[in-house]
Length: 215
Image (cartoon, rainbow, N blue to C red):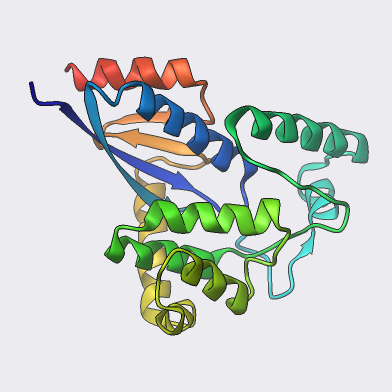
């Protein structure tokens, strides 16, 4: 008996902790339905911090200024995310010195990695570099290392992150998903019709995939 097919478009940002939590939950859900459903996952860009320039800014200060988050709230959120990370098998290593960065060049790499069917590997390498290893994911050497770590050509990777052509590709994708109503991340779009917003629990994702696959 052939499996049912699902296409999942995953819109996210590398600097969004809920995006990696959401993906790891989706990953578990996909595993649970693997005997019935074959899932194709494609990644798409969303930039939470378009206004940031080279060098980034302190994450805690940025959140306090942009969202009015207090120091106490920031500590609690980090604690909660660290626990959620443990539950899904991802290590968050937050610190007071952690910066938030512009992620445009990181998104270029993810788009390019799609040519080698390595988008998921690229995205996970970037999430780890930023949230687990505390690296500056705007830095071209860091980005090149991430690409090389998953078997991609580091010379080509360095060209991609400086490329205006790939910059335009990312911009066009962002405009496309915004036009479809994606204004927050993570966002999961199943079969180009069904939008699931936020880092939903595994059982919700399993139920949604089964329901949509049976239609």
